[in-house]
Picture 1 (cartoon, helix red, strand yellow):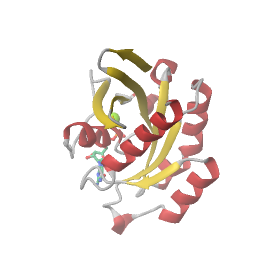
Picture 2: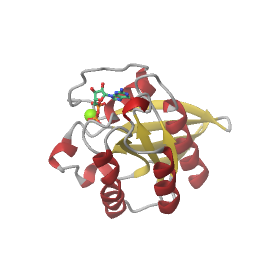
Picture 3: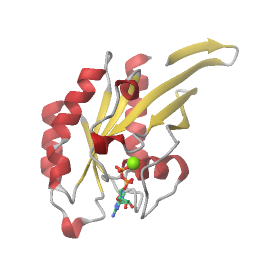
Picture 4: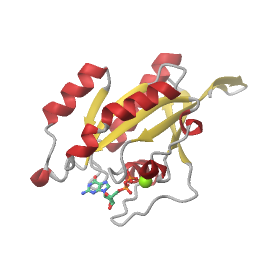
Length: 179
Ligand code: GDP
Ligand code: MG
């Protein structure tokens, strides 16, 4: 990871991980961002380890290699290899399921344990389209993010709200950290 120079100038490649409880929408956030796709009945992603998105920042090509857990989180078996070399993380809960919000401190601990560098972190309250069955208020999300020093955003992989924004804030923050 990091930057490299060649004739065309600098290029950047950043690894970003998506973590959070099972079924909060991690795989759909990634497929919405990388391919503009949503799957109502998505099964655990098999075989796809990561997707790469390219952005231009300050005239430089920045590649984000975004990793999805492929469902290991159900077995609490997300390995250290998953976290290795990550410069950014989206830590996701489901606003309609409080237990997934209660798990966030555990995910943050795990991230801290496995990272050896400054990680740009975004707390993501996904499924904000489910306002009618909301179980975690916006204020609670904001306040947890503030106390832990994370960015915060509510998203919907279903209707696309803030998905691009959430990823790109993290990517830009990593760029600012390293450049
Ligand atoms: P993962 O286990 O965290 O990767 O979660 P998935 O991406 O597989 O999504 C789990 C379930 O939640 C699937 O049925 C998705 O269709 C659904 N889902 C994901 N994101 C959203 C969202 O933003 N809104 C709604 N209403 N459902 C979502
Ligand atoms: Mg998944």
